[in-house]
Length: 266
Ligand SMILES: O=P(O)(O)OC[C@@H](O)[C@@H](O)c1c[nH]c2ccccc12
Image (cartoon, rainbow, N blue to C red; front, side):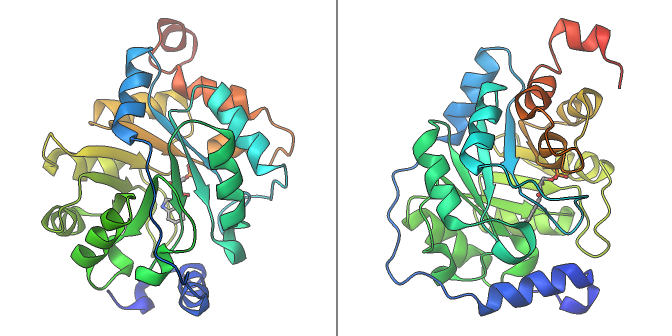
């Protein structure tokens, strides 16, 4: 793991909290719903594959949404989301493992557990179809990827630059997310995905994460090679408490349809 001193203070505090949280005591054994099937279904139906994220708040959000997480997830699926991501981090993102369990019972698409998992006990907190593993934060990536698979999770390995992409590939990652948000300054730059994506082999499922807010951003990331997009803020719209999550999602899942490309330019 790289030194924490290069990280934004909010990220350092997230990591400290993660180190203090205890893991599960029984090893998870999950029968996961396939992400690649869900992405293929979306494509076959003409929807852009979007993994929509239930994120009540975040260090960069403008507010908090305290709607029922299950209702939010259902609204995202109604808007055409191919999968759901659920923040389970409690202290900085307002998430909970219990919300993930309830969401996974309520929807039939794959559910990603989004958290700061640092070791094997950290994986055994809740069953999910996919588990996020962030290259920058773990010591033995290969062992964690293997441990995730032994439990039945599909590991989504998050990278931010080309060196981390190489590490992810060397550890056997098959699903890789390129985070457009820089964890040192918490700033978003869609060029991150554009610069890393060309170096990924074609058989990897490549996900553009963070900072996608408009249909034009969706098309830009797809053009750069994104098999799917992970979108939180634009779907949750934290600043506007009662914003329509189904519509927010639909606008992005339809970004490649003829109406969207002619009517919406932004
Ligand atoms: O809200 P955005 O910009 O659409 O981003 C979603 C997602 O990519 C972001 O929440 C995220 C990416 N990697 C993470 C790691 C931990 C917590 C959160 C994240």
